[in-house]
Length: 109
Image 1 (cartoon, rainbow, N blue to C red):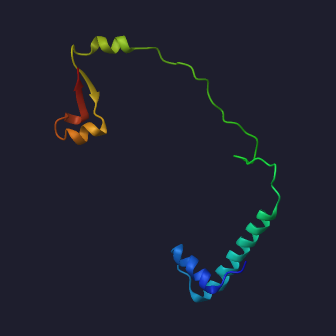
Image 2: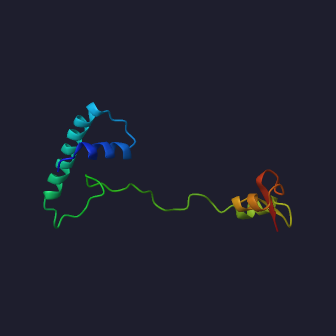
Image 3: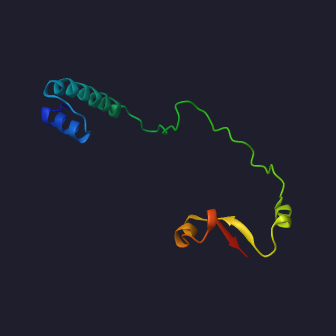
C-alpha cells in the first residue's frame, strides 16, 4: 500500500499535525513503512492461538479477602445524639437542597 501526497496531507490534517510540503515525502515514507509492517503482521497465520493479556505468563497478586477491622457500630451509635445522626451529603443533596445543608452535612432520623 502506497500513500499519495494527498493521503498524507489528509492524515496530517486529521491528526492536527502541521506538515510542510517538504516533510510530506518523509512522513509518507514513514507511514508506508508502518503500513507495510502491519501487512506483514496480518499475513501471519494465528489460527488456534489465544490472545494474550500480557506477553509473560504472570498473574495478579491479590491479598486474601478477610476482615481486618472489628465491627465498631455499637460504639459509634453510643456516642451519637439520640434521634439524629449526621452524615455527609450526597451530590444530589447538595444540588437539591442548595444552602440548606451546612458544610456538606445532612441530618437523618
